[in-house]
Image 1 (tube, rainbow, N blue to C red):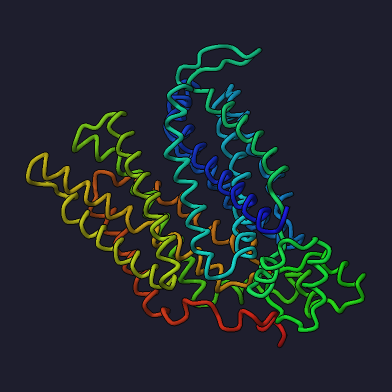
Image 2 (spheres, rainbow, N blue to C red):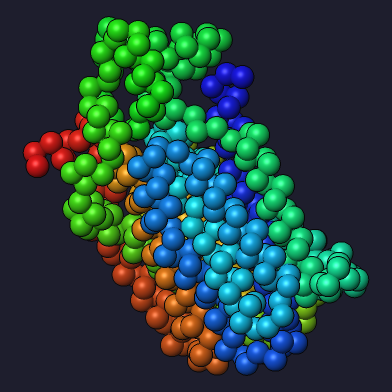
Length: 476
């Protein structure tokens, strides 16, 4: 199997993992409140259960990222993290008490922390010009899972039998169902996931051109070329270095430091640069606003339009379709315009959407038809801007931070996002009857990040020094 086949199968496996994350959210969320009520849990346990997942992912993301950066391997990280997904969902299935249910979401969230390692791997395995498209496709896979998930609930809600000492019903069945799916994913990862060598612009082209060569000959040609390629932030496998040494060739210059990615690394110097702060702020504000809106939408539709479960399910399905189409449109667009342009367009759309909601939804007038139309337009605009901001800020973040420590950096980025997903619902939950304050704060945050983006626009691009390994560390 040649390099391109391994790479494509690995990317497909990553897409499957993200789809399962979406499916899990879609099958657990609709029933967890009723499940907690059966276990006589107080209302605040719903917020604790949802926040526990984000909290454990927030804490473990950077740790998994450190692991993958130090060992330059992602497969072992994924296999290990999936054990927490399996254990957590089995605990959810058992569900003897509200505390076990809460613990199950905490354990499952640990498994989600491996996303930082995956994004680090994707950064090292893609060229800058194709990266935004790959990220968009991966994010679309999660949205596809959110769209497909409710379909599984159609048969899970019919479950009513015993499995040994355990009861399988519409509340416990999502746990055992997801547990089995994650077990299957373990076998898929074992069979179809490879820690393929990093692909820099020079190495990648050489590998594509020589894909029919034997692997050993391919390594010898890449590592033993008389015309030494420029060192990059990208990792070098120890196997490749051994092959180079055995062939009597000189290893890639700077390989010793690349195998020790944190040599001379300063988290403060890396993450407190202007452009990095802007992108981390964009990550926080995007997810804060998104989760706040998700919290607000159901009570709003019930109050204004008397929507029930069926109407809300249909609405969420249509929203999912729009977001998936948006991601694929951004995937197409990212190949034609710069990431910072996509980010700017997304922020403008989000600001327009928030202003629309402030004007037409906070104090609705004009009858049922006009109110419903205003609501649909507001939701459409909010979802339209989401893929633009989400994809562009992830892609830009991968380009303005060092590739040698992408796992850790992506872990920090996802932790910032996890904090936003905890605070967003808490902010919106108490303000569903005071939309002026809730939407006003959201608009203020959007204006803030828009101004920050405008002021830092020239810095939101791939550094020219990206091809010079250790350029920022060599002086220290």
